[in-house]
Image 1: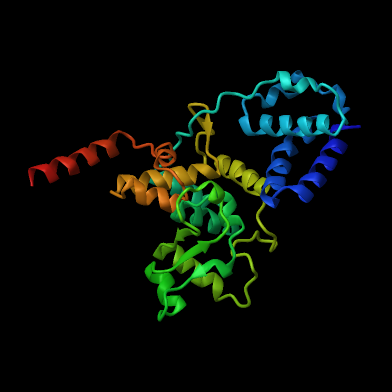
Image 2: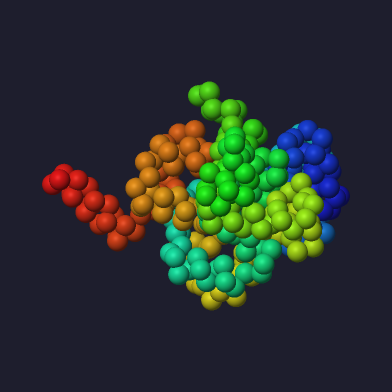
Length: 294
């Protein structure tokens, strides 16, 4: 059985037994492996076939899960791929400055610019925005939609979100804020006529997928002329989330509020997202010093 055929069975099993988001995650990660060695026999896959992916933690995780499932189903015996260990999971430190953000937005296509702006304004997870529906939009009672969106009084409310089952508090919903800038864009989208269920779609009217966002961002990095890597770290969709969270804290937002807006159940998780640069640290110190003197 080829690796591609094995993946087809694994994907079918995931669709029947796992959450749709989980099945999509494995499909998106394993797509690159299939492009490289999908026609090889699954029981002939060896660690050296995967050396080009050895620094990609999530991809090696997905390969391990695939072959562990295959061993449980008695399809493959004693997979050799387990000898390829997952790399040490590091911390994402890349933060975009305002000039880099503007360059990305200006060089992106119209459909990608809309969802990119939404990531920039909300710091939401990539999976949350690409699956966001108009039904999640919340407008304060007594306000018109146009007014609420343009003033930043509206938000998105998610009832199903990552980590909900792990929360120990009574938070049952996830709130995604809508800034006036994002609100104006959403209002323009809503005025185009009968809207689809999904808010953000490709220019072909298709939903955004994990692979599509990853490929668009890779091409945009090159088109925008930004360094492809800084300290071994690339600009990816999650970079927008880290950049916005860092800016929120630099502007004075309390970390517990930032944690709630990011959808984290623990502030310690949020602390891994904040990467203040030298100028931001000095500015925060000056504000603190002035408060003490006052």
